[in-house]
Length: 99
Image 1 (cartoon, rainbow, N blue to C red):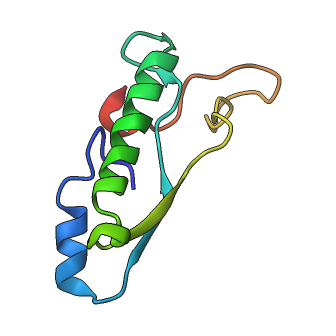
Image 2: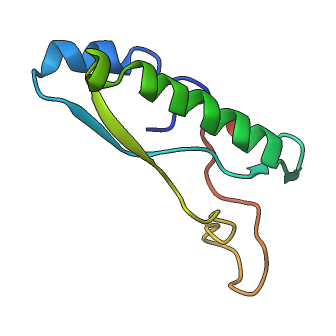
């Protein structure tokens, strides 16, 4: 789930669709910020922290619907541009939210 700094209504919608708990198999943010054309680990950490806090707030331990999530990816996808070269750090590809 990649929708910026918030999961929005994801947890509320899930609750209307299923009585079973939800596991977020993939969430997070890339360290490369296309808006400033540079690695931006501060913004990556901010996004990861905000999203993780939302998962904790929706925890099934406290009556919510979420049993957890996995930050993806464990390594940045700096070589995901299809037109890029394996030996070069590419900054292309698709970035949700454009940043």
